[in-house]
Amino acid sequence: MTRLRVGFAGTPDFAATIFLKQLANPQLQDLVDWALVLSQPNRRVGRGRTLEPSPVSRVALEQGIDLLTPENLRGFDPASQSAVEAIKTKNLDLLVVIAFGQLLPAQVLALPRYGCVNLHASLLPRWRGAAPIQRALQANDPQTGVCLMQMDDGLDTGPVWSRASTPIDPLDNAQTLHDRLADLATGLLQSFLTNRPFETSHPEPQLEEGVLYAKKIKPEERHCSFVDAADRVYGLIRCLDPSPGASAQIQGQALKFGGVRLVERHGQWGQPGEIVALAEAHKGLVVACGSGAVELGWLQRAGGKRLKAHDFQKGFGLRSGECFGPEGSIA
Image (cartoon, rainbow, N blue to C red; front, side, top):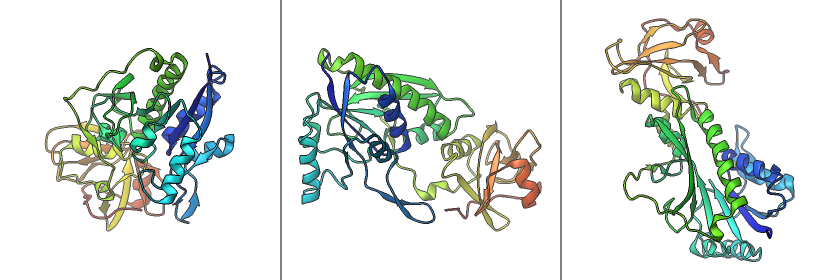
């Protein structure tokens, strides 16, 4: 087999994890020449607002792979067009895209010999868009997965080459599901690059039924209203766990919390937001919802450390019968 000249476009940890595993795979080293990396420009992060490269950019810099960080590939300004021309000079056979964060223009989609493929963390057509892992958890889906699709000019609308699914465990949060889906995606991409189905076959069009869009999580969605039913509260808290964390106010302070467990979907356990059972050494803090109740495994105050519920309640002085409210959040 001739070596494929492949580009990689991605930005967050999810993409960087998969990319690193492809680079380290001895089976691919004679099959793939990673000729180019595309990622989002450096952003200011943390309390110090330090300018930092994306996780994928860091991989490219460490591995000595040519890196482009265009602000907008779909623009008509000189910088955008210069980035497109730089991609063109690489004469790519394929461009692999994972959570890049920009829609590719038609002229870029047409540049590689075999087009562009995208690894998306859902079972398409369910949860197209920016936050498929979080939205699947929030909706309490019983399963999710990853799809490897051929890209077109729509938002996650292209035909699918392969897919892999996994059940969502009741104790899963965004991090545990992220890690499991990254493992599944790694396997799909390795198989795709090894077997090269694009040379002899065609992907399968997506179904037209069951389309849902996974919009990016907005800051205001972090505010947890315990007036909602317990299954909705449970879905919200775990989709934000471990970061940025759901929040609500008690004793005039905004707290983050997670490690949620669904105690009961139905029934009246108390006033919404009421602490109905203090945490024990091996159990969390039980809070009543509009119907049913949830258990919180960890809590954190602004500027403080994340603590197990049993340790937090002692230091903070939480008492049974106190109520959480929706106001307040922690940056």
